[in-house]
Length: 89
Picture 1 (cartoon, rainbow, N blue to C red):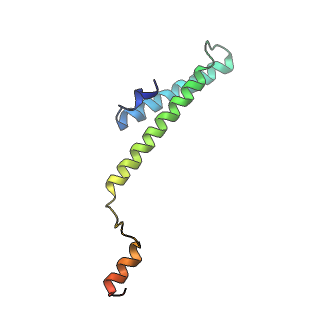
Picture 2 (picture 1 turned 180 degrees about the vertical axis):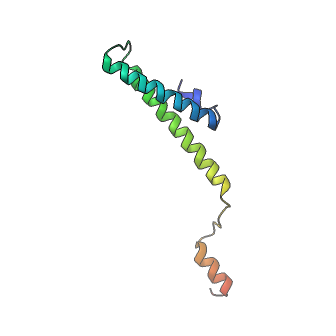
């Protein structure tokens, strides 16, 4: 079950997370009432939601990095480039 989320697309991850959140809320209500067969299911659902959140944020960062143009990675950065443009050493 741990690795079953890795092959899902970004929209599928978000819908799966929303479904699990709804199930988790229902489970919490049932737990308060006392009609729960397996109380450890709460922990499992919480961890699955956390895994989905991790994968979603990783996808968002990946998309964000693709959208940004690559920066000059030379040592010194912007100040070194400004000095080169002025002709300084």
